[in-house]
Amino acid sequence: MAIQRMDNVGIVIEDLDAATAFFVELGMELEGRAQVEGLFADQCTGLDGVRCDIAMLRTPDGHSRLELAKYLSPAVISIGPRNRPHNVLGTHRVMFAVDGIEDTVARLRPHGAELVGEIARFEDSYLLCYLRGPEGIIVGLAEQLR
Image 1: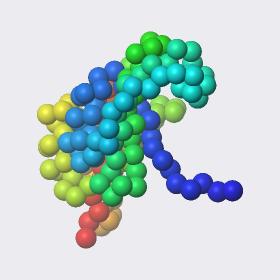
Image 2: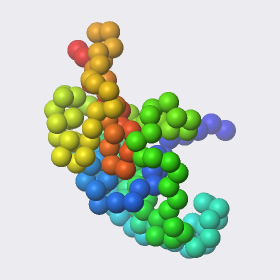
Image 3: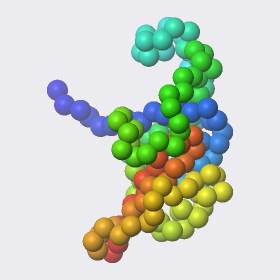
Image 4: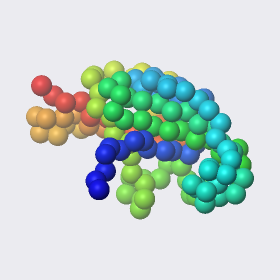
């Protein structure tokens, strides 16, 4: 048996509205919002009394999704600073292919986005950058050069 596809990436956040607005501005489409709770949620997560609000977003091509989750119970646990560097174990980024990397960065700045480094050119293939988005999430952007 083999993997069929990657269904989604889940990120736990505190401000669901702000994080959703950031990813919608990036170009993702909000599929819906819901509250998740009950025995299945407890069994799946290994936690007791799970109740969380989620927002499910998808890329315009429909192939990838991002699930943002705000835990109402049990209480969210914060481990370390939110502005951790890129080389911390277990911490990496979510990467998106974009058209117009500079315009995308400019549109995301009002939503709190800050460049981690700078926009870099990889050979004659890509412009790349990492942004720190809502709640310290590192978001990678890649513009393919033609």
